[in-house]
Image (cartoon, rainbow, N blue to C red):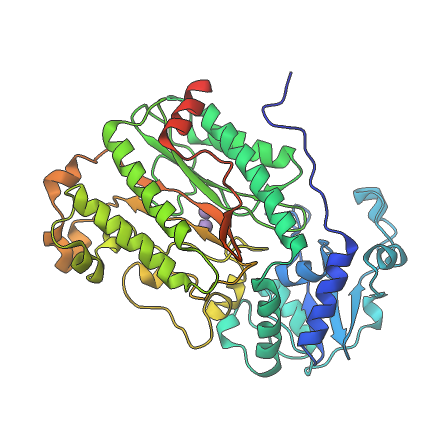
Length: 462
Ligand code: GLY
Ligand code: MN
Ligand code: MN
């Protein structure tokens, strides 16, 4: 039986990538520091655990998921500390590299935990979960809170800023990883498109999409969203039966074995064709997304990309008669957030929302803060774009329950009778991963279909 996706295996980054990143780290941070890979977490009982995924800062410099490992930077020299494999380890897990083998493979000094001595002067970053934070606190001799990036002070803050500077602008090896994640994410979406049928469950499409990702040696980079209720922004139930006449929203991304993420959303009809109203609204979201992508370039403030998206959507909704009034004025009054209540996207890298574990310290440039305005308050990034940064561009249109009741002072600008024409459009989002290049931008996920005609052709071919 032929596979519905190409036979493929990810290519790892060369050892020099990690050596070079560690060198650049030492160049930017002069103190002593420790980065923890973290600990695996039980699923339900001790021996049944979630697959271990190392913390992203650690992964950036080491590239391996080494549970319990600590990367120490001392007087400019990195050393990796971990527990030597237990003699029984091979019985349960197969051959595990010795510390000497790891040292040769990583081109990095590797020593046993027993030799590690740290004190509270070592800078570190907040681990993502309480157990890892408690464990690292024991090593460092001071209490660390999980994921409290906004509260960092002193050397910890300086360490965070040095690493943010490195991770914001992706090197050639990171871009190569992101391209691989984008490639496999694309195949997953193709499989989902072809496997969508009225009468099937959302879970079937999720299974097809994640099957491609797993079959290509990757994992999902976040919990997949595969839903006919696209208006629920992070819908993670997949038990619904898809019906002809509905739209299916799929927000699914692959993660390479080194942890680099794809993050893509496509919305397509359950039947082989969009209804007229679905096509019209879909094309407006696509126009909005294309306008936002066209705005991505070095030196552009990401908040302004969000504004381009919001203004384009408001102009389009006015053109369709769904909003009444002057589009500029409507935009200024925040009318976009009625139907597009989230930000246009976020940084992408080792984390789906890259470095969000550091709060807004990574996403927002120093001195910039989140707006409190509806919609804008969920904007996860407000930096000036630079070549090598990767961001998502993901505007949407959603009709949430309580939309009219919650519209407040904007209630009068919604033309209910016109909006009613779009009753079969609950949620549309279109999301791509975009690399900033010196001349503008490159869409890493360009190969995924998103025109109405392309999507319908794929649906028919399924
Ligand atoms: N997958 C979540 C997001 O797009 O931000
Ligand atoms: Mn996203
Ligand atoms: Mn997404």
